[in-house]
Each structure stands twice: as C-alpha cells, then as structure tokens.
Amino acid sequence: MTYRIGSGAGFSGDRIDAGLPVVEAIAAAGNGGAIIFETIGERTLALGHLARRQDPALGYEPLLADYLRPILRICAEHDIVIVGNFGCANPRAAAAVIAGLARELGLPPLRIATVDGDDVRDRINLATEDLWDGDAGLPPPAGEIVSANAYLGAAAIAEAVTDGAQVVVTGRVADPALALGPLVAHFGWAWDDLDRIAAGTLVGHLLECGSQVTGGYFADPGFKDVPRPEAIGFPIAEVEADGSFVITKPPATGGLVDLRTVKEQLLYEIHDPAAYLTPDVTLDITGVEIAQAGPDRVRVSGARGHAAPARLKATVGFLGDWFGESEISYAGPNALARARLAAEVIGKRLDLRGLDLRRRIDLIGLSSAFDDDAGSLRDSPQPHAPDAAQDLRLRLAVAGPDKAAVEGALQEVLALYCCGPAGGGGQRSRVTRRIETRSYLVPREAVETTYSLT
Image (tube, rainbow, N blue to C red; front, top):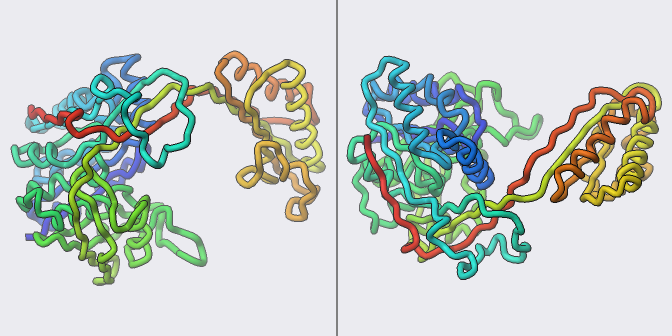
C-alpha cells in the first residue's frame, strides 16, 4: 500500500505555514503517513549548543511551536507521524515543548520519542580522528569547541515509530534518515536489503530541502518560471513497497514538480553519484530513472545501494572571531562620488585608529558580490555603473578576535552622519560571534544511539 511522506521544512527559518497543505493532502488520501522537518545546519547546531549554555531549556529549533501548531491535531487524528531534527542541541527540551503544545490544543497526551547519541564531545579525540576530505587543507580553528555531533542513521527513528511514536525528535541525523526511518517502520524493510534502503534514502534526499524539489531555489523568470511562488507547495513522496515512488505536491498550491526540479535536487550536494555516503547505505544514483507521470508528478526508480561506510561523519563547531558589519546609504545626484568618498574616509579612519582587522567595503548597487576585498571593482571605472547612479548602500564588514576593535570600526560608519560626505542616512550596525566548523570521520563504535519514548 502506498505510503505518503511529506516535508514541512527544509532549513531553520523556513516558511511556518508550509506543513499544513502537506498534512491535509496526506490526511485526505487516508492510510496515515509521515511529515519530516529538516531544520539543522552545521552552524545552526553549534548556535543551538550556545543557546543551551545560556539557558538549559533552550537549544532547540526556535520556530518549533510555529511549525507544529497548525498541524499537530491533524497529524494526531490521522495517524501522520512527525519526524524532525528540530531537537537540535536539546531534543528533550523540544519534546517538552511539543507535549505542552498538545495540552494547549486540547489533545490527548502524545507518544513522543527522543533520539540521543549524536553528541560525541566526550567520546572522540580530534587529535587522532581524520578530517573529512571536504575540510582537508583548512587551518585548525583556534577557538573553543562548542559542539561535536555525529550524523546518526535512521535505525532509532524506525524503532521509535514501530514502538508507536507519534512524534520523533532528533538532534543531528543524516537528513535522508528523517524519511528513511518511517519508511523502514512502515514497510518492514530489512537493513541488509540495500537497494530498498537506498531507495528510502533517495526519498529523504529529495524531500530534505523542502521546496527545492517543487520549484524553490529554481525560479529564473523567462527561463524557468514557477507559478505562484508565494504559495509554493512543499513536496510529498508517494512510496511503494518496492522502493519506487512519485514526487508530487499538495493540490491548489503554487510551485511545480517536473523533470527539471527533480533533477536539480537529485544532484544537490551529491559528491559522487555512484557513492553518496550516508550512515545507513552508500547510495548509487547512476541508474536512477525519472519520468513525468502527470501534472506535478514525477516517478523515480532505480536507486541502488552498497554497504554503508565504516565511519560516521561528525561536525565540530568552534568559537570563531567577531564579525561586524555596518551600512549607510547615499542617494540622489552625485551619489556615486559621495559613496566612494565615504569608502575612502572609512579606510583611512581605520588606519588612523590602528584597527588591525580584516576588512571589506562594498558599494551595493555598484559592486558587492563580484568584488574582491581590496575593492578593485568598486574603485575602477565601470561602464555598467555610470556616475548617474543615484541609490547606493555603503557596507563595511570587519572581522577580528577583539570585539572592542570590531565595535570601534563600526562606530566610524555611524560617524559619517556628520563627519562624512553629504546626505548619508539609514545607518545600521551589528556585531556577532562567528562559528567555524570542521568535519571529521569517527569510528561507529564511538557513537551510541538510543531513543526514549514518553
């Protein structure tokens, strides 16, 4: 029997109303199903650990209640399992929030599982672990370790769903595991049935980024047009017992599902199409076939699986330097000359004050994304940005280990109000502590995955 599993979020900060049409469509089809929320990034997780340091009741996804409030009743009443890594650095606190939300909505107590084991700070020695190839050659971070989390597989999620969990809260798991777990629980796939495990992993890979497979991060007007992107429908996979599936979206939503959107997400972050490494299986997509199966319906089949890698990836977060940015606008006649003068003044002021910081000055509207830190494009004559440009935003970005020096540099942009060229306005500044990450390959035996059900 077809099992439907949808996506409610593809990153922390995704649209909070995206999940409702998904669960309504799954509920209308009957037979239950699942919805997944993927809200963790490498730095997101480190920031979660910092938040938990400040308050032991924090560290989970800040939008957790906003994501679940519209859908919790429907899911509970229609046997739709919710699986999310929105536990971030504090799955148990997230579970408490969900239980409280159920009480607020007048629902019976929910069966909520939390998956533990991804936090490996006390179980690994970075001096003896190998750096992940993608980070090889980067200098070792100098700051304090704030997080170290291994990418867990889907086994604990599957066991929790089999045990009757209505909501499964995880920290760091491999993104596709969020979907693979419910699929294994529903179909009873064996873990050594590598082709089916690979198929479930591919389902998760196509769903993990939310609307990217339904037209999000895809639109390019006149080349790749997307209907009603303001109401884009998040994806639903209709999965069969043999591992084949259809990617679709809720009816009456915006966006689109076609061969192009599926191909783009299929190849997203795939370093080797013949060997995409996950904790559960090595996924081979070289034989995958896709076919349009109707409007907003693409059929996917042919995933193959090989043995899972011997080691797990673990990402470590380190405290980095202080980052500051400040902006001010120049508009009207001769705005380009005034903005260039402001940039020159800022550079000289930082030198006069001896503020030894990495720095970058952009003129947004003239040059920013394509310029270098020295401002080569900003300061050169440019036929595409004539002196008639009348709406420019000067941006100073600085970084360094001394917060006071960073704040001093930003203060110089504020001082342009009266000390700089005419007409500066709309100044704003912010200072943040940066997080650096490095990923390592750690032995599986260093990771103990468990779950608890309440």
